[in-house]
Each structure stands twice: as structure tokens, then as C-alpha cells.
Amino acid sequence: MKFSVTVTLKKDVLDPQGKVVQNTLKNLGMDNLKSIRQGKYFEIELDDSDQKKAEKKIDEMCKKLLANLIIEDYKIKKI
Amino acid sequence: MKSSVIVFPGSNCDRDIAVALEKMQFKNQMVWHKETKLPKSDLIVIPGGFSYGDYLRSGAIAGKSLIINEVIKAANEGCLILGICNGFQILTETGLLQGVLLRNKKLKFINKDVNIKVINNQTKFSNKYKKDQILKINIAHNEGNYFTNSEHLQKLKNENLIAFKYCNTTGSTDEDSNPNGSLENIAGIFNSKKNILGMMPHPERMIDNLVSNTDGVNLFSSLLN
Image 1 (cartoon, rainbow over the protein chains, first blue to last red):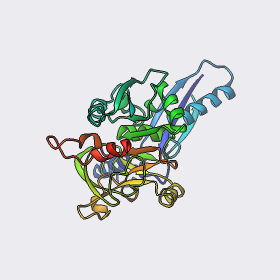
Image 2: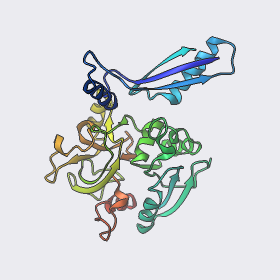
Image 3: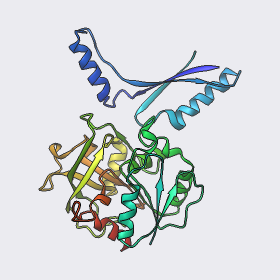
Image 4: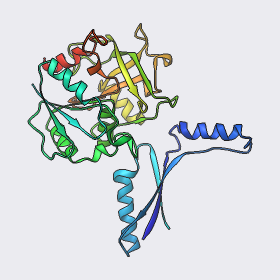
């Protein structure tokens, strides 16, 4: 079973990398660009056939290591 | 006084801190991160560097390494813990210190000598300094922008848990003297029991006039006091 995890900085946390990317794209003429937040993406494969159990495991991985909950949010998706 | 320096793959200030500790007459041992037992220590130092190449987040992987369980146990039993630079980042990732070190505000790695002010000199780590004493100490980091929630910031102030703040030559902690965007110019903090100090500046680089200055010496002599 395969999952994707996206980790992004929380709304209120300054994302200087995202800002620089945003400014650069604006310089390239992308005028309608509203905002960009940069994040991290993981693809995780689990040896588990029970989706609920697997999702719980992935959630634990996020909380324990993949995300720092003080500054980051995460989203889990089955793929 | 017995000290242990924890070494991770990618630590690069481990030898510097060992030299400083030995110069100050500590009986020091180096401890590899895969060890599961710590030698009896009065002080544990988590040195600077780029543990695990800063993979995932600075300090994240080292913060879950085998030896860290022992460090947490020792910390809870009152052992003195000093985390410098990457060591500070690791301490926040373990939860021993609250808050987080974000990317420097201006996105640049900063390596320079900066002024910091001693905010609390009533601790095991700082009793040889004077209150508000200004020190010139080297910083070298990419993620030193300290951030925490407002509740914890209030606690840091109420309980006098801010160790050092970035300042200018006259001691003013204004925005111009804040190198990395840290909340309220914070350069180092204690835990509530004040047996753990995390700081971004490198006192171990300031122990000899031949290479820099001696502003870091009193941190080590405070510990021996």
C-alpha cells in the first residue's frame, strides 16, 4: 500500500524559500501569481493490507519524524 | 568534572569543544551516537556541525538517534546539557528545549563574530559572567532563527530562561544587531530547570587569544564553579 505525505510550513510561519521562488516567478512574468509555499514530499510504501492501520502508521511517522509540528503541517494521501 | 561529547556523522565542532573542555581541566570522553550507554558525566555536550548532512531538518535525525534516549534520561536526572549550534537544533528536535530554529531570515549562511549579551547570569552555565555583559562570539549557521509560540516566549521571560541575546556594541538588542531574524534577538535559552542550555554562538571557539578572544572561557569556568 502506497501513500504520499506532503509537509508544509504552517500558515503563520515565514517561508523565505517560497517567497524567493514566488518573486522569481513574478520576475518571469507570472503576474497573476498569488502565493507560493514550499514544502517536502514523501512517497511511502507499507507492507500492510488494512488501510486504516496503515494510515495510522503513516500518521505516527509524520508525528515522530517527518514533520516538526511546531512549524509544519502534513497531509496524507493514498496513492 | 566529567564531560561527554556526543559525536554524530557530520559533527564538525566535536574536536573544538573537546579541546576547550580539556584546556579547562574537564575529564572528557567522546561518545559515538550508536552507543547505548553514556559514561558517568556531569556535563553532556552536543556539538555543532551538520549531523546527518542536515537531512530532513537540521538536527531531526540526530534527535532520534540511539544515544539520545540516554541523554534525555540523564537530562531528566539533572545532568547538565550544553547544545551548541547544531547541538541546539538537536535539543529542540528531542523536545528537551522548546521552540525551533528556522532558516535564517535572509536565507544566507552566516559566519561572523557577533555581540551577544548575558541575560541571566544566575545559572550553572553563566555565573562567571556579569549580568548584561557583552561578549563577542562567533556564529556559523544557516538555521539559527529562533522561533517559539507566544505562550512559551512569555514563560521564557517570566522565568528568566533567556540566556543570551544578540546585541550591538553598546548592548542594545535592536533589529540591526539581529543576524538571523531570531524572535526578540534570542541567541540561547535554558529549560525551566536551567540544567540545559542551547545556544547558536560557539563559545568553544573563543578560548584563546591566539585564534580569537577569550569571551567563551567563563562559560566553562562557570560550569566548574
